[in-house]
Image (cartoon, rainbow, N blue to C red):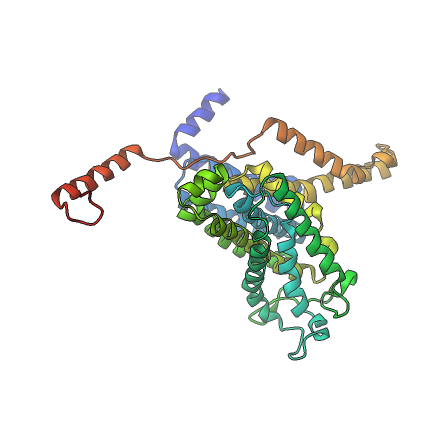
Length: 430
């Protein structure tokens, strides 16, 4: 009976509308009433995934998705004490989703394995941190630092540009290597950037070395200081929208097709006239720029950064998001990043805290060696292995764009008729 009902809803557009509206209404009300419940928060977020699979127009899906994550979820969660905590997780999700979209261009579209992607994130973060604090006074002979909080908005594109330049600098020496060798080179690049940032406190103190850069000024929007996670959430959401628009437009563009051709067969792509150098450098630069933008947001949000935030583990984490979601799949990468961050920062943390409370109250005795807090990474690793075994192409595998053969034939016939009517027109055969 349930199966029949599901089929009826799936086949009927009206049924889908009613089902989705009821689901969103109930889950929003649930989060409103149980505003501190992580379960209610996650069930409402699940509506975005359900929306992806419904047979709605793409534009309608975007509008509804933005309505849920931009209005309904923050409003429903704002009634409880966990509001800022939820928004903090939401901000982290958007930061890592945007970074994953950037890495997806490099790895998923162009097929260039990059294990040092977090370096571009660090470049964007340090760019704002140095000038958004008094650190720049140590080496800048002119100007007054920190810059005012209103200047933060300028550092978002500046971070993107500088990260893109570093992406090109990385791309130039690795043009001749691929596969495992490329992975080793990019891994080395990521570590070099981290070590350099960690030691640039002498002879000229640029990054304050291992002490990090504290007291980064908060951004300001029309004079209002942005300090809460709920405010940073909307900044990250805005940058995410820009990134996904660019990534979507690029995927089926001439450059996007060139990336995929290079990924599938580099020699054949070169034989077809695709410039390998420009194509690869464009992938590195555009992918890095996404990370650089979010680096500025991360530095402003944390108000303190040091090199320990940009380790190889972070690069691996972003790569896992791309592989888990589905390499080359934009919706897959978004889902993969969201699953990893929510699982790691919200679900497993809450389970660990809950088991710790049971252990402290004597209901459930957990040995120290098996403390949930210590086992968090282990559990996370097992879940990733399970996903990798049973979803080898990712949670949402990449789908090639469907070509309407009949439409192409019609267009070809129209062009052929034009040539027959006017043989001298440009492009006609002599």
